[in-house]
Image: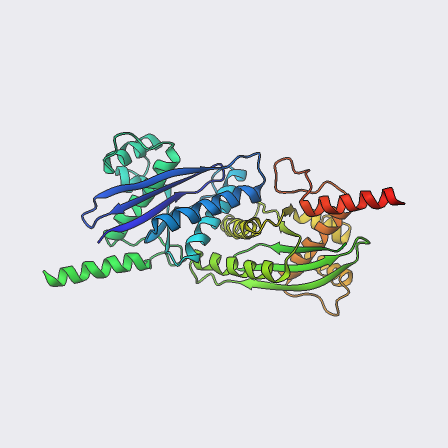
Length: 192
Length: 192
């Protein structure tokens, strides 16, 4: 069973998007990646509209089982964080409209899953994403690499049966795709 | 010419919505108001979905000329502000999808417009909204009264020809509805 995850590194100026297919043996394959950019010269409503239309297109075209979004932190620059949160709200609502489950992962969870250390820098993440996905060249810009890393992280955490931070306050419930995977895994174990 | 404004006081737990019709002589009439509530027990994607569907319904039913949203500030509680920003992103994108212009107003702008003082408390805002709209009883909860106050504020600022804080970085451009009003006003002046 292949899990298709669409990862989003939300932002108003650059929103990284990456789609990966992950097999049960953890092998991950890049399906597509890109960046949606909007200009600070444009009005907020126009910028959010561009992001909304783009995420709609990506969800329709790639039909992911789950959307993985970077959990927004407020430690960032004050004006930046508002835009990031607004963009993430638009992206999350777009998935929810389609009944696609949404999971949130923190940057350190992503770094830890992909590089083995929660404190790695962006270059290390890009390097490992390139290696994991067997790409000839590193995905650019870094926002796209981050989105791919998020998608890989989600699939690996879901597949390992680890408690995955979903969007709920309980944060330990599995998304439908994760549950489907966990169920399949349980059945496979019983069959052995 | 009547300007119909839909005001939104964004929030995850309670999103206040209010629609007013404002005449050129500043007379404001309440069309509808309400609150969309979501439970902290629900996942973030489900909460944002409820807000997205509700705002769609309000926009479709009332067809406002403009959406006025409270400008989100990051001085608030950290976790609260993220939810407010995500909800506002969903609301703003919903209007942008329909080509409805969006304007942002700060809480102190709203207080100043409605009560005459930028530092009034919530009770004063509710009291004045009740009086301005000639209502028999104050709109409850306060989030709904705030949304109505936002809508009134927007129409009055637009009608007075004052520079209105739109969503752009320039913050001085008029929305199409404001421009339409300003144009009509200019023509009326020439006709006299």
